[in-house]
Length: 116
Length: 115
Image (cartoon, rainbow over all chains, first blue to last red; front, side, top):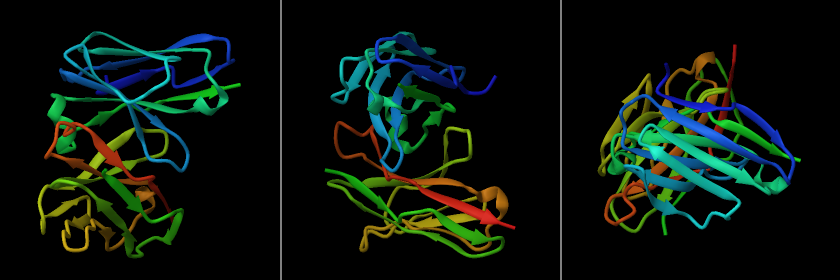
């Protein structure tokens, strides 16, 4: 098992669909993150969870809904998305919240989302 | 606020050429600086880091020196290989405030190394 696993790797959905992205980490970390990676833009931090509690929500539209049922799993629920939401969504984890500040972020391979 | 500016890509080099990818930053506190690398089809992984001025981070033949006077953290490698083809991201974390868990990333620079 790799450290951080994301499924599905590719997803195509219409604007009226509801889908979910899943992230699972096998590293025993306490903090998990969702990032959005768009072409020619810096990575955007979307959500941060520490010990299953949401710490940060960076003004993300409500059509993105995160869920962290335990410290090993993180979901991103998607509904009524727009074409501009098409991007690579990256999940990451760190041993603790401050771990990101030391660069000790471990990323998954990402879920490539296309919204038609 | 904090920001990171990297040189625009893509960068195409021949094998064994010298590599420099420029990175400059603005930060309100005392940032730590990082380079992450993303190989094709993979997530980002930490390549090297430096936590204070004049520190040099190094890994896999890559080096970067934290230059406070020029607010820069340029990535260098003396002889690139085809396997170095990837996207490189410069990033910073500002440890002085409550957002110390947040990394600010640059846009990334795509490097292609041809045989």
